[in-house]
Image (cartoon, rainbow, N blue to C red; front, side):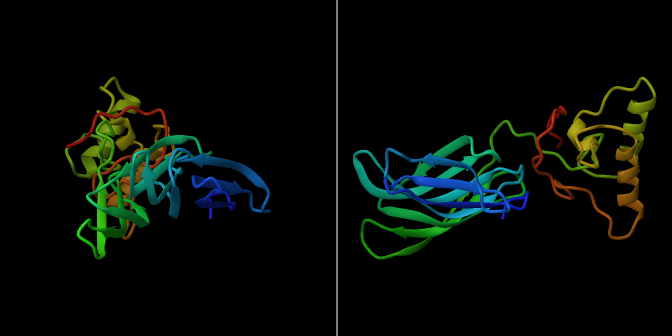
Amino acid sequence: VAPDGGYVVAGQTGGAGVWLLKTDCGGQLAWQRFFGSNATALAYDLQLTLDGGYVAAGWADAAGDARFGVYLVNTTDDGQLRFEERFPGDGSRGGYAVKPTPDGGYVVAGWAEPAAGGYDGYLLRLRPPADAARFIRGDSNGDGAVNLTDAIVTLQWLFSSAAPPRCQDAADATDDGVLNLTDPIATLISLFSSGAGLPAPFPLPGVDPTADSLACASSP
């Protein structure tokens, strides 16, 4: 189920490529995309990514290589391709399930058929992009912890001539893409109200699951 109440389906086309389609909540087609057209590829699992896009996992062969490799395709929320990758091995392997990880990467569980024969379980872990900024939500001063100092740093920048937070994404405690008074208030509420938390990435470092224009140099 898509965040807007519609549906997203991944599968295989008659031409043996991956077919990704989205409908609205009434079942009317919103868009459809085709991937892996130069290979025998299929998608077995589809998940929503942290930033609102989609990731599908399955398996695919390649020109001159009849072995199947784990196939992963990642798109934006409107189905535009971000990347597609095939991960071959010494035999065939494929992905049955994919899950985004809090740090912006992915983990894929599936099967492997070694060249020597037999079948094994298979686990693939993909790191987040090297240029993805990592931070803790609310950590305005970038010291790796959320405390009263962070709220003060944000307030000083908002109401005096202090330098802006090193990672404005981290200072955006409400994760609404704007830095204002609600952010230090949200940080204080999370510190002094039992059970209150902040949006991801929190309380551990990770990448921002939502797209915005705020700048960020990775926190420690």
